[in-house]
Image 1 (cartoon, helix red, strand yellow):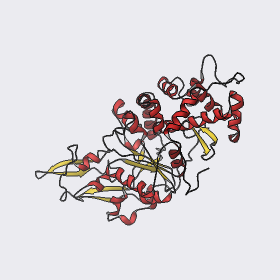
Image 2 (cartoon, rainbow, N blue to C red):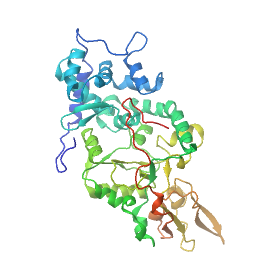
Image 3 (cartoon, rainbow, N blue to C red):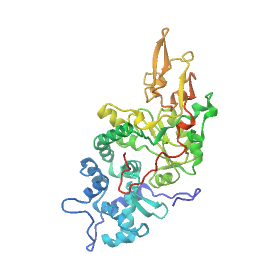
Length: 423
């Protein structure tokens, strides 16, 4: 159950969490513990968990699990499905033959490390093992400051190794296959910068479900967490060629989970300013691709860090944004008469530097450099219109309301065994 809307969420200090992790490392099963299902001489508990995640034999992911978890933690995660949700603690106490306080410590540690999630965030009753899939672990373990301060930059190095190899190849093939499928389904759509739309002659076409202000207003609790991808590629820092900001926005129950794992609770105004900064930095915000403001996470992606983007370019030299996102309903035009060929610190013009879709370029016109846009490549993030100092770039609504489905195109399926359906 979520916290009350105005309820203050109490969190532990990092020192408290480090003491928790230290205690759990000393725990062992009692003499009357029952055998762990599916564990055998040929497959230990780490192999069993990998199989449940559909990553049987994945060497890099195994290294990561072994770095963060003790065998008894993995055994507790594996056993959760053996018990009714409100009887998990008692069940683990008997099965593992350990005291209740140790069971609670193990479950709390696994929650902090990002592999189990309670239905009731207040009481921690009803844990589920990665109900939304592997990327919950990717995000949860790398955004919790108490973990990297305990386990060091090796945590991020192991994740980076997995993302650029085992997961990178599968994700590349999965996205390409999904785009080439007859249904051509994508569940995310690019978020347009509302500040650019407010200056547009088509401002009256702006819909609530694509207006960042309305999305923020819809929710009752907001949190900002460090981007797991940016932390991963920088070994725990926030080094990114496009932003220095923490810009992953979490809403309502997702925000509560983030706060409980040392995320930063923010006000509605602070969340809105974080969104504005992301647009100024040229990050690609995205949302669920249907007419809704009611969702729990807003990513702001970049081509140098994103686990769905950077490995494809680095390893296979190919990435098409349309594999992952639908365009927004918006596009831009550029008035070359107003263009002043401004410069970004990178040396490029600002609109060229900020565009991750390579839709803008500079051309010589009567001896002067002017900006042009290829509207076929534009995905409608509108960051270029936001940062243009000469106001030479204007946003236009170029797609009808029907471009965005009125309801989800398919039900989001929960997979208790780990990864979401990749079809």
